[in-house]
Length: 75
Image 1 (spheres, helix red, strand yellow):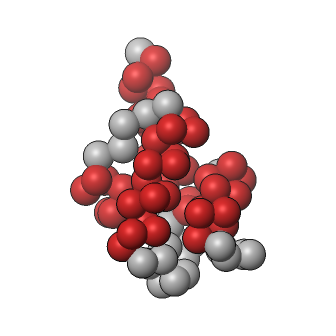
Image 2: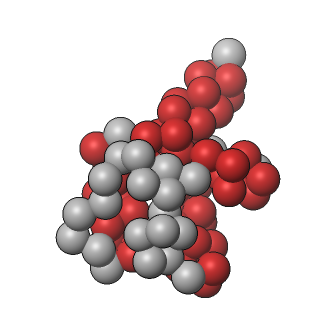
């Protein structure tokens, strides 16, 4: 989760992103959200479905989603 939070902070230009705050409430515009999605996909080498990413919404849940997708990909 720390890596996800770091990337969210970098892409959003935000110093602190609490793990349970929705990223759109942390000041992300729709363009920044798209940048974040693409950055996370590249960093973790996964394809994150848009609807799952939006539903996850918080750094904690996004990290859990990425973990599930990576496990599924490795299986």
